[in-house]
Image 1: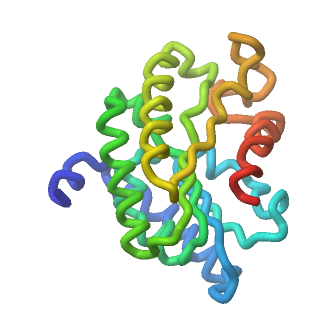
Image 2 (image 1 turned 90 degrees about the vertical axis):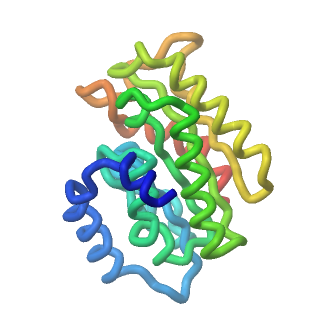
Image 3 (image 1 turned 60 degrees about the vertical axis):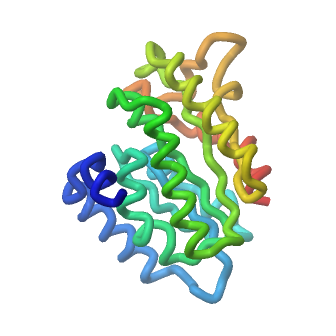
Length: 206
């Protein structure tokens, strides 16, 4: 199984510097005596810069790394999740996977392995899967993202320690995607976009 995952994963070396920078940052500020909430996944998490500010009553670790896919998070689960012994883990992966032509069932399979790895380390950890988001840059793939989100929802229904944070609808205006919540690349969100996410995510943090 691990050989198979290694074959599926990206070139891990491309993330080494970013992973090291995350570790160095939290080595200086993370307090092991406090309960921790980890937010991790691809760049939509990495660029959510004010997580600690908007959830000041909690110790937040943002270990998002840009361009990552589910296989990358699995490969770096020890460094980005487990070493912080988290009470809760928010995961955002699947966005880049779909854009890289991976099928929803492949993404779900790897997500299950990430979940198993977390639970093997600490069974009580609450894991929140954040749905794939819509974006201007990838709107042509919306059907595939919706299929992935349905699979995420079904996965989370099967386990009381899994929750599903659905952020798709709140980013729409009726049936149309809001354009004012993205930066110039049409993929990553601006402050307005993260304010929408906050309305959903806060219910799972608190």
